[in-house]
Each structure stands twice: as structure tokens, then as C-alpha cells.
Image (tube, rainbow over all chains, first blue to last red; front, side):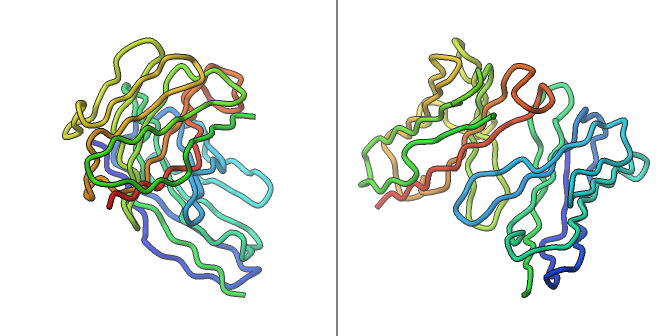
Length: 111
Length: 120
């Protein structure tokens, strides 16, 4: 089945850029998503990218998709302390339309 | 738009009792709802998928008689944990996927805030 991997932890200083990476094995997803989870809360949809796109920018967020390498990344510009959370990438699971989640990356923003 | 609510947000119960969790899509019609379970510091584990008016499809290893799912309308799904035991303690999160126009692509899932279940 689909395997989606993320690095477990990323620490940055406030004002710096953060880059969260995601690799996946199944390239049949139509859309790829980034979700944010704050402690004790559900998942908040941050952004998504259509699989035939290479890049999508949405305010401070930039998503890069390299289909050849099966690599997805989320760049957060001017990272703020409020960005501290766990970030999950997810693919739409091909024919089943289920979301396959990555392992999650804990982003810690130091003031 | 695309708001999903869950109730209750947390519940503490005694072992052997049943607990019902509600998931509602507030501003769109959810043709499909999903129930996930999340253990501390782990990713989400899909438990089941439910389509309005039909039986839920459970993932391998999930006991359908223990986790009863009802999706009676396009805005409401319920998960009932029957005869709960301490090992059922977890964070349960639902998501809803609607028709086009809910704010994202057709297969976008919008998540509820989660329900923390603690079984004593």
C-alpha cells in the first residue's frame, strides 16, 4: 500500500522560513494536501496541490511537487510562533479516494 | 465554509458503558464521512468510511460490532463505542467530504475538532 514519510521534527527561529518535506510511494493521488494540527485539536486544511502542478503559492505558504522523485514540500515564509503545530501531508489515495496520511512533522518555532 | 463539528469534545466514562460521538457538517452536505483514531504522537488511523444511507465500510482490524457507525443524513454521522474499555481511550476525529463547492477539490476532507475519550 501507500507509504508516506515525513521527518519527525523541525525547529526554526521566528521570522525564518520553514520547509517541511514529504515523500510518498504511490503516484496515483489526484490531489496532495497539507494539514495542520494544533495540540488537542482536529486537522485544519492548509492548502492542496493538483498532481499535474509543480508549485502552488498561497500567501506565506508555498507547495512544491516533484512527481519524478515523489517528493512534496511545504514552505512557510516568515514563520511565527503561532505556526508551531504538527503538519501532515496526505494523498487522496487513488481509486479508493481515502486519504493516506504522512507520519506528521512537529514544527517548533523559537521566539 | 466547510465547517465540521464534533460532540462531545471530551468524554470520560466507566468501563463497560457505551459512548456516542456525533459528527456534523454545518454548512455543506457530506456525501461521505470518515472516522479516524489517533494515538498520542502518532498519525491518524482510518477506522471506517460511511456514505449517507448505506452501511459503513470498516478498515481491516476494526471491529464493526464494537464501533457502530450510523450516517443517517447528509449532515450527521455518529460513532458509538460499545462496551468501552480502557484500551479504547483515544482521540477520535471525524472528517466529511462533500459535493463540489465546499471550498476545495471534490475529494477534500474537512475535519472536526476531535473527541477525547477516556475510559476508566
